[in-house]
Image 1: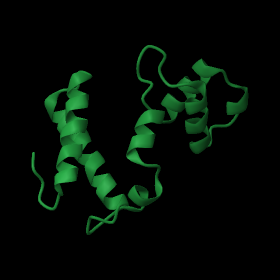
Image 2: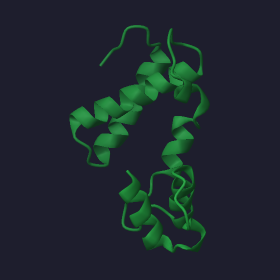
Image 3: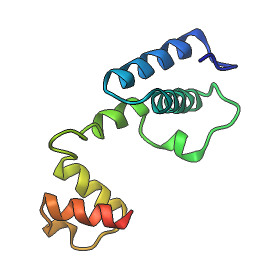
Image 4: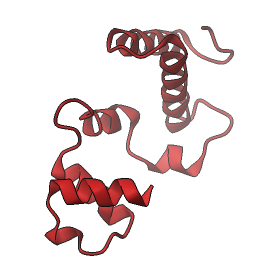
Length: 110
């Protein structure tokens, strides 16, 4: 799916991300959307786009974030990941919660 303004590198990046998502079982539309969003965010971080949201510029990189949040499998998110989310959402009593309690509190806050 060529996008206007994307370099050959960004096209390859898009294809790579999309292929990886398809291999992991995502449907075509979801894979395309995630790949496009990821590439656009990287373009914004690199100063390649005309507009960029504050979050695109200040958040951790897409690659790093994906690595940190990739625990959707059998074990789900780690306790440390859940604790960080609870902290970001100002959930009180989080330091005394176990993993299950943190997961419940974080999910209820959404």
